[in-house]
Image (cartoon, rainbow, N blue to C red):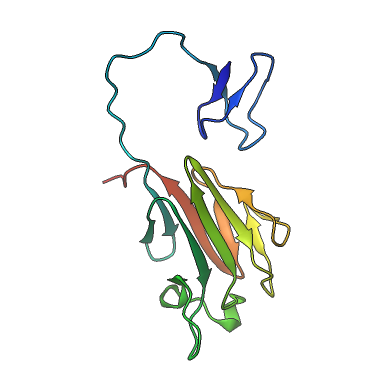
Length: 150
């Protein structure tokens, strides 16, 4: 068996690349480690224009959008400049973390959601990988994994 080095999905030895995230497949070791200390994964959304980061807790599901007088999304992007003029919907997209898998789903936003410049289908979860650029209207966020670099 081989395992993806990014999302830990298992594949038969004949597989060439991860169909989930495009990561490299590595051969699983047949020896069992005696004691392994695992550091929990950390995920965050980075706003490159301001340097601000939004931590994502494990596991979870969050609606990204902008607040108005009647609606408050789980992650309000209005403080980052997200408004109707920038093309950000109130309920724009949803980020989901299940185990090692992180995905984003466009929730029928008015202007769509892009990953690395490509429009994603509405209501179909798309995997996220380290460094992916997420565009919600004209607002851009970058998906980050692991601890923040100093």
